[in-house]
Length: 390
Image (cartoon, helix red, strand yellow):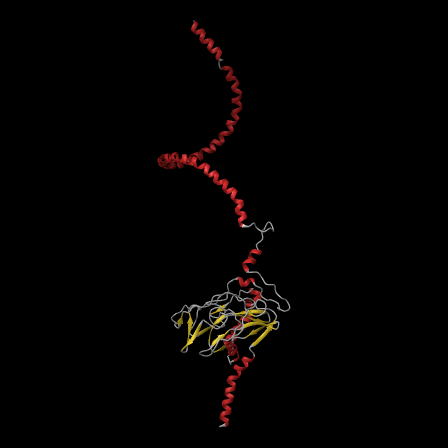
């Protein structure tokens, strides 16, 4: 009997050791650089029933921060949910808190990962009689022949931020509730083997490094763990998160100055290319344009009576113009036919021009002789009178 109890105890210990040991080493690497902002990306469609969405996150390796793509994962056990990993600032360092599986959602730093993970709990779905039901309002569901357990429950997003860490300067100000503390202290299951392999693949891909992609990874999300290419792989969108620094120094050693809103930064970074002076206010520009506008209006008013007088004449001329149009159309073919003949005659005209120029001096010389040969008007009158007298 004692041997049986001893064997059962050893078997139970082998099952529970990985769970309890993971709970004790919940905090991983700690560094002094803040993680980059979360990238903006689309969620791939749900590939299969009971797949649960695990959002992407920034991990840290020998070459710096790298992005682990979000992906759909089968839960290790029916009824388990995923608590995402997060970075938290404390005692001058940023510590990585591993994600885990369990029957409840624990604290994940108040980080808004989206798609049901709004900072607290999970609104993307729930287990129902051994089947996972998906909230259509926050999940990308395209294959309804496979994904049949769906419901529609609107989720209010109270925060719209890309901040990826809790605490510190610029981090999310959130504290775990008493229930979340209990869930974190309770036994839970670490990431599955396929999740670990998924992270390792992202680590070995240089394009996933924040220093290379500048916060916009080429592989932001995948339909399944380890699928880093092909259909369903999603690229991150460029967003305002890209503007933020990809590593902030230790808050205690290098305090950061609060930054103005992004729309204010955009105004500050658009100086005049020709002059450092700020542009004049809109109302001042409008006042400068008013005299010119008023002068133009007066000219228009003065011209209106003349335009009204000319209008009847224009109307009377319109019928004549319409009557002339058919004749103009009829004359167009003749003009087109005459055009080649005119072009052929142009070379002959050009050849005749030098001869005409050469003849001009002779014509000028002959003009005096012609004038001398012509009878004077007075002589013509005198000769006429003499004939009358005879």
